[in-house]
Length: 109
Image 1: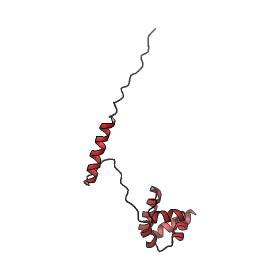
Image 2: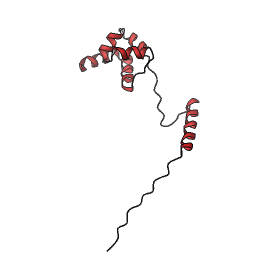
Image 3: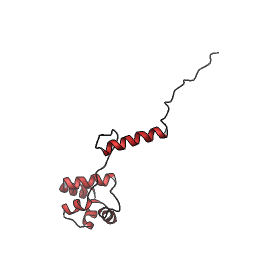
Image 4: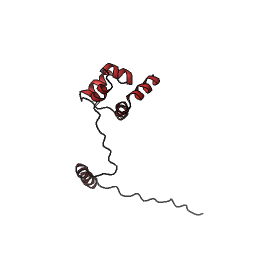
């Protein structure tokens, strides 16, 4: 009777903590110098108050129209919290095309 051999797979050795830390420090330095760092995503902060005043709405109107809580809008404007990615993206749409954003929000309700 033949014996069946199991396939062996070699797993690449994971870099040590020290090696990963050294790479991270080099990447941070490159980012600080303004160099492109592959895989690094930097989100630009959104000025919620500027967006809201651009569309000429009160905090309550803005929150109600676009589906935010009034507390979230206040916290964002006072820099106690930052909008999550989806909310920040919606802010950019509101900033660029406020009428389209209002129309989409009213149809979604």
